[in-house]
Length: 525
Image (tube, rainbow, N blue to C red; front, side, top):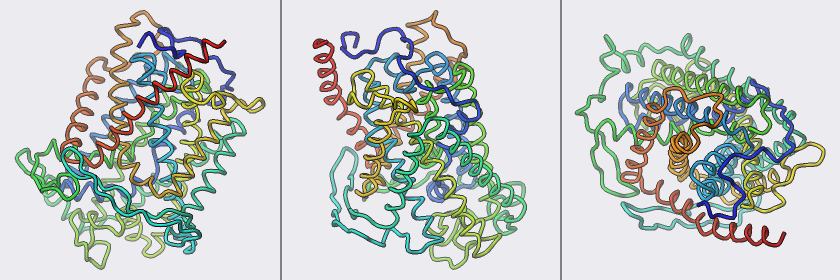
């Protein structure tokens, strides 16, 4: 990779930008928290519980996510303090493994991970706004451009189903587009303004999640649920969690049912919990705008991930104290449906309905509106910095590497990101794209933490204001755990893994094209 024409060097160069360092420790931590907390924590526990069939394994799934995410944050802290540059993870991959790896990450981030999440969370905002305004709905079409029929594609280990979606403008995705455009405009007017909005909504959504935990602990406790999920001496808590217990898993779409052990089923269900905790690394994208980044970046990563994951684990204990794990999909009451079959998987809503009855749905909808709005803002603010860094390396359109002359924001990058996110809202494909992202994201997390070992070897004397706690044991543990999850997903969920892998690999010819253009540009100067 050393022969690449890309402007990445073997040593980190000073930041060639004039970003305004307007993010203090709280604002940086708010980006971590705000990017993590969306709607997932209120929903995905239903799907996890259907997979594990055990209260103990439901909690174990979230504890594994907690351990992995905090280890990742501890490891990224060293890289962030060592290279406090705009672009974050893109820069770490570029400097440790070479510009191709950095480009593949940025390519996947732009096509799927960041923009797809912005679109999906924006549409989720629209759907929950429909609780208050019924005319806002994904079925209320303004312009229906047509239906894309389902297409079954055979892939190694199973079948992938593409399509089966409507394309056009409905009131839910119209709201999503408006939210994306408004928040993009907010972030055009300087990082301090965008951070101010992020601070407000992060505080509100954190308070809402904490409120769910406290209300659930004191007012939603159900004797029926506690007896079913815990029993005498916590006997029921450990049901179906033994090392010799087998769990049913369907291989792919329409594939055969097979039975797997505890470590395999926990890896299978990690897609939901890891996705709910993802985007914690977004703060590293804004490193060029963080005050005292060598201190504040590692600290914000540790504080933010620690707080969010603690609340996530507590929220799941609340679910278990309010609702039976096992339920009846045809049940007519919240308790009868349980966690597994909560209406539309909205477990958080079911808990509040136990306290506030019909008003509970509106209270949870309000909490999710706060969460999703803040999540979209954080991802818009952070993501544009990666494409900016790619452009500065000659690996994206030149205009994206320019800052607004007054506000010092990557305005073109923000606009391009908003445009692609809005197109994904209209396409209806964002949901399928998100199915592919967790596997791809895990690959890049493995590569980035692997890069920590490479940099320790290549640059032993480089300045490291913060060194990863537990190195080399904890980073190695993360790589082993993440690699195991990837292997299991390749085997049992090929419909999620192969498409994500294909999207990443398509970046190789794109990289060759961009690097060639970069070479021609350099030679012409």
